[in-house]
Image (cartoon, rainbow, N blue to C red):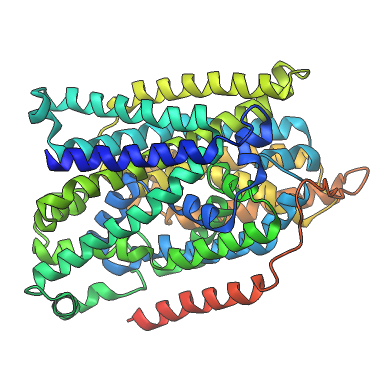
Length: 529
């Protein structure tokens, strides 16, 4: 009962603070609703970025991967820091110079409106079919298990799951659809503090459990018992072979942290370029510490359970249940609930933004006022949330979806990254090249991963999907450049400065970025076997 009360108390506190913080923002304007009035500061941006990224499918899934493969899976965390530096130095100045609300808006001015619409459609399809239902399902499994909802409500496991899915879905929708980006960002920042505290608790209690009450003794035991698992360089056959760090891994990270609407929208809401860059730098530094929460518990679980768990996917929940004192379960569940909610409402808010700006205003009602765009975006958001709540219970094996999700997302993330990179780095490549790259990139990836790999060559004889992504990125970029050479634009593209925000960069952005990159490289060298 104490656990339930502490859970409800912390969750309510976040809601009240978010409401008070957003009362003065004009949610009826596009900038106010979609970008928090372009008023977000570095701390809010950093907290929101990290919380949007963290959710149960990652906390459970990545720790499960660490249980199986050891330290090498930290690449998903540490390389994100380098991608954020690249976004801060190269991409964000261009986004804010163009006064963008959505990433596809750039594609409309650089190529044409059709390219923008196709890209927005790809984003929305990926969000509603893959991301939202998985976030709801995996989050509900965690909450239902922590509070033993079936026993508490005297219902079956499947009924408890549906109750949790609809509970999370409705609360997340209220934040995202009715509060806009600022409500999402403020609630994220508060939850970030809780998640860092709660997330660090698990490895601390875990190390104490295997070290007879001492954290340092536990760490020494962990490292001496299985030293080979503390290797930063993954082997062939593992989830992250070392070679993939230099191919598709960096491309996935660049797409996610630099061009993915769900993530970069936080930086687009910055009150000026300097604040946006400081937010990305702060988030990138904190991301280096991510393995403490997302990798170390999985490695502790491997030692604690002697590698005998029936599935790597239950490594994190099993460790939480074994080492966390009962009086802290309510607080930790509230923090985890915040992470689930954050990912759900961030994806939903981004979907509302993409629909309202890129589809409704562009194709359905070009004369629509800003209030009408926001209103119809909210209606779309409610429909999207309902669809996700109906789809979520149909998903099985959510814990093993972390690696699978990365592979599925390749259908749209590499083609989108290709056209944005080529679009920014060239001035003559025409719109037809972007359209060909999107459809060819998606089509070839589907053929590669879902026809050739399973039915022709077999999983064991086929290149890692991250290598495939890199090959297709280079192929698509090459085709775009060739088309640009043969059929260039009539007029070279020049980006205009809309003067919506001040774009003087943070004066230490390159120095700070270089230091963070050196720290990441140093970590890899230190742990390389």
